[in-house]
Image (cartoon, rainbow, N blue to C red; front, side):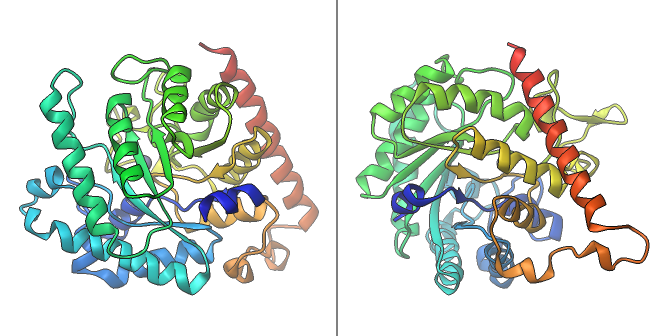
Length: 347
Ligand SMILES: [Zn+2]
């Protein structure tokens, strides 16, 4: 079904569940595991609803780090089945209510070592386990995300294919434009495409400005559907990924990222720019909340359930006219385009 949706129009993703839940007080920074889906499911359901009402076409099951390796860290490996199943059930319930899609979720395992074949089998076993439990509820496709090794990404792809589901494989790039196993960006995505990935893309770590130049290269290198899910935290050419930001001389990640957050207008400008580049799946990752997604949806010309609460600033007694606001939107978009042109020149 995801492939039919992509054929018709851009598919709008949701935002970063784990970071938003952490901000709201329901995920522990550090392990970043999603036991909230069984401990406080109403909170997860509400955030899914918030993203759905903001216009997301896809709800991602909140199963990031719901694999054995991470659940061990919090002593909850015994709840692996329960957590993975609850994550997809919550997503399914909300998606059905709003007529949108559910993506099952896989991510980097921290087990995979390119030099050690035994870890490849273990990685596959952990992915299979997650898919088995997530698949108890109906998923429309799977997203494998924040994977930095091509080898691990291919194992995720094989696991998703074995389950007979469409696969969206997104790689993460921090400083380099190659995978941690040393494969260049274009070559890595060609490989994934040749292996049958339905959608390939880039997610997490980088903000739109740092991600879109890489996405442009990906777009050029492979035919078929391309996805981008950047973080909503400002990065820069010398610190292209958000975990490298500093505040008062200390790392801003993970507790002091607030001043780096992109505004909704900057995320809206990203959505437009990505569409112009021919990106078909436009979403977001860490730091992106429902207000970002609604602004992105509306920038793409959509009216969404929570558009009924969209800004109507002309009713504010001080701020000014609608013309003034539209001018500001245009200015931010122009700035954004100028910036992405400048960053493209850098190697
Ligand atoms: Zn992220």
